[in-house]
Length: 278
Image 1 (cartoon, rainbow, N blue to C red):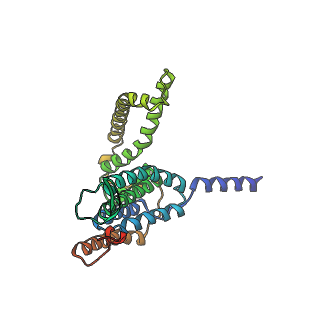
Image 2 (cartoon, rainbow, N blue to C red; image 1 turned 180 degrees about the horizontal axis):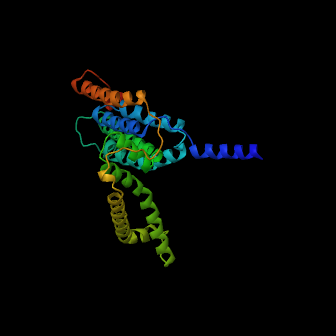
Image 3 (cartoon, helix red, strand yellow; image 1 turned 120 degrees about the vertical axis):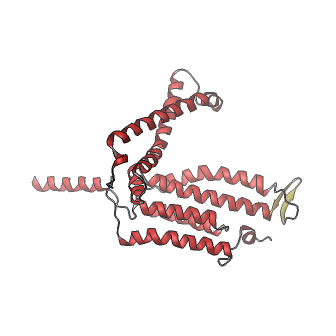
């Protein structure tokens, strides 16, 4: 009896601990910021492609983020952008001196237009991939702990963490409003009806968000978090000398790569060169 109860307690404890994370949330924030700086600081499609591939590999080995959820979210956000960019930039590029790959009437697929479309899409896709990875793998408590470790004021860290928690609230509130309209006889399955209901949904969302923010601000004042000088983690995180060095060296290396690209020491090929045009 005693052995069975001990085994049950051990199993429950293992479930409570859950999967261990490898990085501190502060380290994740630094890597996220440096990756975004590389994406927009170095004008080569190789950089966002590498970062997007790195995000995919991270999702595949992550014990927290599901590959299917990440891929569906990124796909739903990135595929429409790709179609629009190919139509606007690839087929209707306004330049005169261009290298035409294919032409039919007023539409023409040029190297210059396609290179711009690829460059913009890769940047947007890497940005979305990183943000979705961070958003799916980080809750409000982890974000608060990471921002506090980066020495942000408690009030600022609390507001940022609370703002991230508003995303599921917006989704839940939207579903509640649609279900309420459907219970009143509205055919909410039709997109035309949803467009008609959109102003009321937006007003309801704004009202709910303002009330939630005001309530959280009152909690912040009552708890005295703004006046507290002590830093107390809300969760238990693994940290050490290696991660502290990583948080210092990563911005330095990122800044060095951007400077090297600007002055021409880091000659990475552009999208037009990779496609095979100019």
